[in-house]
Image 1: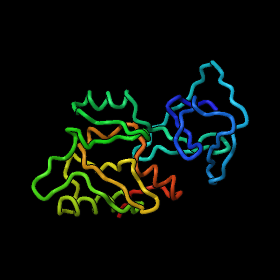
Image 2: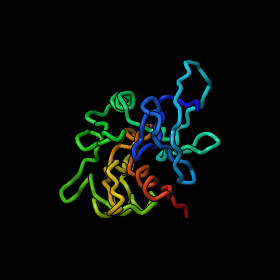
Image 3: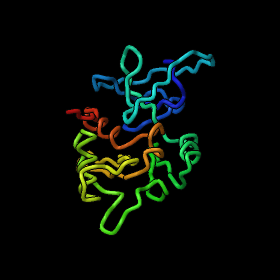
Length: 196
């Protein structure tokens, strides 16, 4: 496999950087079957590869075998991008996600409003956003210039997780693992945008 180093493989129940994979670790394939790594050789060569960035869902399959990888992972470079955009105190989570709870990117709330809210996952972005806006703000629409961020705390047993209302500029184009990736991993279903 020839891949950029920021790819994470779903191995033994978690996203693992390629350099941390070992013989006898497992990888998940597109048919949900598992394959065991039998050998590991690192070739010190440069190969031209294409690094895809897919907004809001950075899980995809690589190679003819269809190995599940994740391209989004919040690291110091991603946090630096956010800081360069003028936002402070966004934290990387242990899973490679982003937590805006202590940041100045959160929506400024008024009395009776919330900018962080637990929701039941629906599998549809629009539905989650509308439900969160109704519950947190008392309105159907998301405020202009803001987006609901699925925190990477999805619980497959309860089908629930946390949404944070953040400045769109602090979220768009920032690689990270989020709750939607965890939902897909748990259910096998990709999140979608509904169009009418």
